Image (tube, rainbow, N blue to C red; front, top):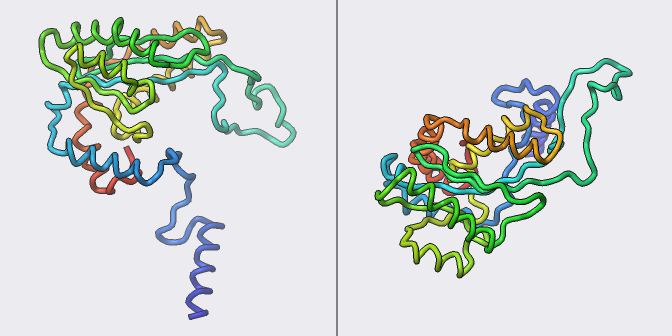
Length: 254
């Protein structure tokens, strides 16, 4: 018994040190949301409920989500190759600011392409008043433009401002059918978040230096997202749901 335990410890140590042990692959941990178990059950129930939906069914859904952009974004480390003594050379350091400005945006899209994008005032987070105004001014116009008189379904997550009574009442008065994901729903079930990551990478490459430039870049890169990409993400919903069902609601690759 002791020998078996010792062999296991040595195997783990060697694999950790050299990364060459058969069947062992070195790699960093994937970032995941710190979800409690009930959230996994909520996601699983959602997938069971809509597991029979086809790509055509999801094509009738208009997805929405919020995202934040930060000037001089420096989330995580950036790797750079340098020689000894070059640690503080200009090309080896990354500028930061103590209190960077945050830009919060709301956007929506469907298989027909991206819809409206609302940029909130600087350092302003979404609340129920802003949300109702955004839905009134942006969502309805997007639905009219993309679906006309066709029936569509509106999706948003379970953020507190989304579940406010005034918002639920407003949606019902507009006779809108809506889906609600959990507050901590993983990105695999909200394709707009995949699109949001794509948008953030494009914005970061432009390196805007002030808030006005950041807003212009965000809007420019948003409207440049192709209808083909939006349709591809929507059509991936059945396979995304199948992966979550296979993993029984646990985290999985998307």
